[in-house]
Each structure stands twice: as structure tokens, then as C-alpha cells.
Length: 424
Image 1 (cartoon, rainbow, N blue to C red):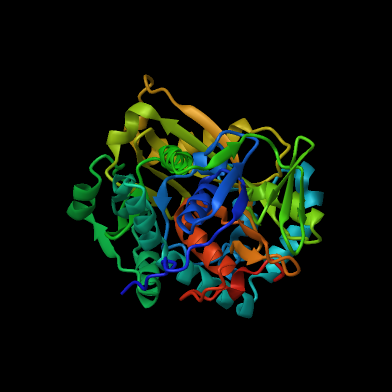
Image 2: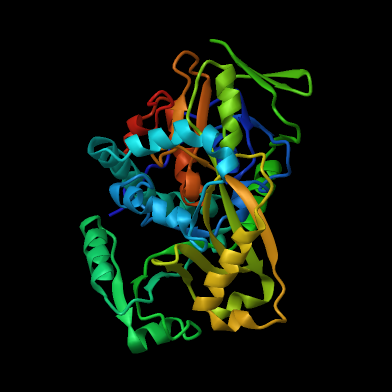
């Protein structure tokens, strides 16, 4: 049974709010603030939905409740990094800058920290689908959420790893079906013959397309009286009475401020006396417009560590964890790795006539794999919602509900302690 975390509507808020960041989290928060009665202004240097949200796989990965920092990851990290076709990349010219973050990442794998992060992710992901259903029903666009199923596959003939993972998922309330042979072929007839078995998640959801989702959220936000200022925010000044937002040397004043600026949130927080170990995890994707019909579901490779699946915009192929900051240009060989792996699992992609687009963006990632959903410890009118790493689209709607509950001092069925901005 899914517990509702919808905010009560009997005490509408009054006043104004600035939301900094027009990705899927910022857009969701802006809409939720409007629902609660606030007049909302949205700030972003770019058009809405063009940051990390644009490059998302579109799959709502609610089963990803294991933090990235765990003993298994640490044991395999060196081999993954040294593998030229592996999913982990760490440019040597950035190593000196990422070293403090890597130390925190290793420390996050300690048993107590790991248990806390896993429990928090489980709570957050368990509520995410219902939150999206509430949000999309409210804006009249339930069709943007698709119950599609998901398939995690192995090429090895040994099913022991899949069976062990299935038991672990079942212990956490996540149901799967072990499939192989005719059943696997029925689910995905175009997969390569070397794919031996998989775990099928029948209750999994995806969105129709992450960018289209952002555009619909933004259109509704504007139709409901929202204001969008396409300018970079250079400074925040919170007081006990309001929050000043500075953009292009102009100060705007609001009753509340909310920072949802992804990896760029770190600089804004440093201005208000808060230091967070927020790092840019560079993600890569390919999109093949004419190939969406090749797959029925999103497919994850347990061995190759990448995901591909059908969206309205085409077949989306997503992978790579590259800790390289925000200044380095895309590294072209990362796209070649995605091409190699996708063509190994989906032979029809070897057709030379297929056209594709490339994208690289910056996921906001914290060492413990948890977002920040919190208020400033000294200025309650300034709040934060960022750092959802790979799960920005998955967790956006529930994050919005949680942060508005926090502003209104309402209780939640989710323990927000693990998401504090001061936890580091």
C-alpha cells in the first residue's frame, strides 16, 4: 500500500517565491508552490528543461535504492576505471580537484552511512510514482507517465547473480520475474541472442519524454500565472523577512526562495555560508529518432552498465559516470563506448542509415547518493532541493511535495532528516 504524502489544501499559503533552476525538479517545485497559493517566479540562465533533465533516460528507476557508494562499487572501481569500455571515467586532469569528494564517497560506504542512505532512498523512491500521478493528474497530462515495465539483462549463462539480486529486491518490496528463453524473446524479440536472461519489473514506469515533460510542466506553470526570468542568478541574500535574488545587477525580493539549480547550486550555497560536497557527474547519451520501435521496454545491462529505451523522441541510450566537473568539453570516445555496447545488445542498430544525436550534461551528485531537501539553518525562508544524481526525473514530484511540506511545517510520512543540507 502506498501512503499518500499529498499536502493538505485546507490552509493555502500567501506571498511570493523565487525558484532558482528550471530543470524538472525546479519546475515541479514551482508548480507545487503555485498549488499551495504562492506567486512564483522561476529563474534560469537557460530555457526550461535544457539541463541534466534533458539528457535523462526517462525511466523512473524506483528500484535503485542502493547508494552508489557501497562495498561492491569500491571493490570494482579500479577495474571499471581502467576498462576502456567501462562505465566509469575520471579524467586525470581533474583528479586533484575531485580527490576530497572521492574521500567522502569512500566514507559514505561505511555500514551506518550506507544503511541510512539506503533507507532514505527506499522511502523517497517508493513514493515517487504516486507523486507523479498526483502532479500530472492536476495538470491534465496523465498520459506523460507510462507503465512500461523494465528489463535488467545478463549475457552470462549463470543466473546466480540475477537470482541473488531478485531475492534482495523482494526483501525490499520490489517484485520481479526471472525471464529467459521464450519468455525473454516474447518481451524483447530484437535483443541479441547472447542475452541469456533478465529480471523483468512489471510495475516499472517511464515518462513519454523528459524534455516534453518539462515543457508541459512549464506551460502549465506559465498558464497559472507564473513568471519566468531567463537570467543567471548571481547572488542570494536571505533575511528573517525575505530572500533577495540578484540577477544582472537587479535585486528582486520574495517571501521565500528555493534553490533547485542542480550542480550550480553549490556556488549559491557558498554565498549564504553553506558548503556542500556537490560534484558534477558528467553523463552522456545518444538518441536515435527512428529506432524507438526496436524495444518495447527500457533495458538495463547488468554487465555493461548502461540503459537504453524507447521515448517519444527516439531510442535513448544512456550511460557513463564521468567525474570531470563543468568546464571540460565532452570526451568523444564516451559516445563510442555507448555505440559499442548498444550495438552489441541490439544488432539492428548496426544499420548504417540510422542518424543519431549526442548529448553530455552534468548530474548534481553528492557522496551519499541523497539529495538535499531542506531549509537554511539560520534563514528558514531560503530552502533547497537539489542533488538527485541519476534520479532527478524519478524523484522530482515527491521532492516538490516534501519541500513545500517543509516550508509549511507539515509532517510527512518520509523522514527528511537524511536530506539535511548540514549533514556533511
